[in-house]
Amino acid sequence: MIAGIGLSIFIIYLIFMVGIGIYTSRFQKTTEDFWVAGRKFGPITLAIAIMASIMHGGSILSGLAYAAKFGGPAILPFTSFSLGFLIVLVIFARKLRILAGYTLPDYMRARFDSLFLQGFSGIVVAVASTIYLIGQMKAMGLVLSAMTGWDYTLSLLIGAAIFIFYTVLGGLLAVVWTNIAQFVFMWVGLVILLPVAFNSVGGWYAVLDKVEQVAPGWTSFTGVSWTVTFLISWYVVWLLAYSTRIEFVTKLYAAKDEFTARFSLPIALAMILVFLLYGNLYLGAVARILVWEGISAPDQAFTALVNQLMGPNSIGAALALAGIAAGAMSTTDSLLLMAGAGVAHDLIRKCYMEPKGVRKSETFYVAISRAVILLVGIVALFGALSTPQMILTIVSYAVSLIGVTFFAPLVFGLTWDKVSKEAAIISSVLGFATTALWIVLTISGVTWVKIVHPVLPGLVVSVLSIIILTPLTQKVSTENLALFFPEKYSINK
Image (cartoon, rainbow, N blue to C red; front, side, top):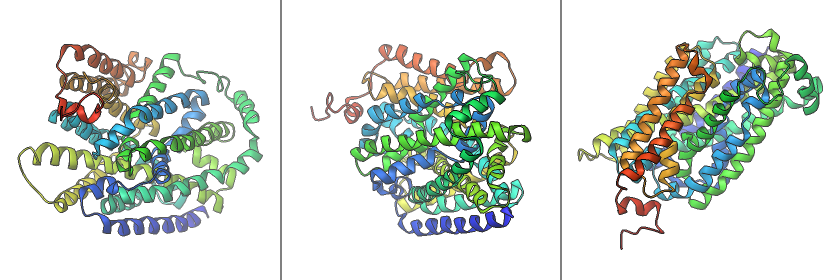
């Protein structure tokens, strides 16, 4: 049975993950060790870690579900991913690495000289990462349940306990090395399906012909049911997501130098585009052809497809599901770390302890970081046990809230020296509030708001706020600007 085979593979995998956590815990002496792994990663290691933390179990499980349900072109915004990475490469990477912070809220304070902005954005990171984490935990629980034969609740509890354990112990160092192991597992799980899928339905052209027959409009620009306005806003979601995605952007702080931070990005992007083209578009079409009529919920499409192609009692099916479980963990641990950093580093240390003149040892702050990560993991676990939303919908809401909070202050703040503290604060707060309100109205069933994704109105408000208010307010001090615009400002002049 797949349950027996899957359980054996899963136990071996978990032992390996726990071992990494225990081993890397020996190196966690300071908060720099814990949050950015001592800033020692080279380009290949960093690229794989970035790819693994972005292309997660939810990307496969719900990305495939969206492709199968709505149509490939509608959910595969290659342009958005590429432009998002280009923005990070050209505008963010070098300056953020020079800053040598731990979190994106560190940037907000350093660039705009605002304790409030670090605290507010730290709360956004903590809340949105927890929401995002709920979606990833749900993906992990669904796959582990199919793989081991356990019920969903037990699968979720055991899987969550493992990645919380190694993240609490090893910090970013454990996260990156487990990400690399999970990257290998994930690709093995996907590649093993390719020859069987090809034999069942054919190559690209054959699959596209067949899926158009069973779902007319699937290969059109808008898919089977998307409107043009929602499609555009969906592309905007992922443009913002991949230029402000915290589990991606904050890993640049861990690069050993500025060159590494930039050079790792094209490598990661190439792997991501291949992943999406095969793991979402091709397999999504295959799922629509072979298993769509036999499932009760879109997020069941991948597990149903694995059983159809590999056989429900095969080693191949167990390996494929193990790969997706690994992919789910590869993002959950990164998100858990970022949510913990938003509370422990940005709120407790930078916004409460240090402004009050309270001096504590690095050992104290590492302990606080671990306690906060444990607490965030427990909160997300309870959320994953009760949320009914489709996984990718949860993810899109979370990345939208983070995107509208950081996008305008990052893009304008790193390219336009006149952007003021006041403009950045109002841009972040109003962008977040607008998107949050739109999400609430969407979930509440208000019909007219569903014309566009909640990210679009929030982005418009955020960008307009920073453009309009910047000329009306004073730019920050030369001391703050010198770090980001050294060619124009110098504190020694």
